[in-house]
Image 1 (spheres, rainbow, N blue to C red):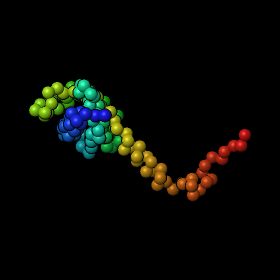
Image 2: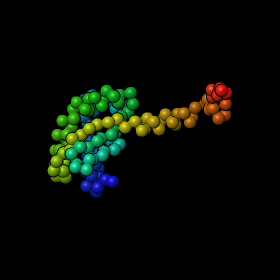
Image 3: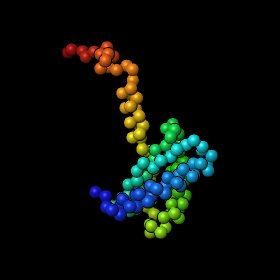
Length: 130
């Protein structure tokens, strides 16, 4: 169960991280890239923040994540400047790709497919009787 303090810190980080990351992408000449922070989880001792990112287009995700990870100290510094009146200590930031949106998209595509095994049982492999 997350404490109120954890939730408050997570929401402060989430709000400011969006601005920092999107600003960095724009300044880095990456037009047309959307970075959103889908979730931030802060550990009980407030020392680590796990940051889940959704990056669009999806195929740029891995490359951007590497860039973000290598710039983590700069991102942390920028964040601490923005949040110095709200947070005494800036937690260590660990970044992850949140692939839940991609997963939902795949399910959506599967459901919209024309080759529906319910309507056309021929699509299913026949089960062999032993």
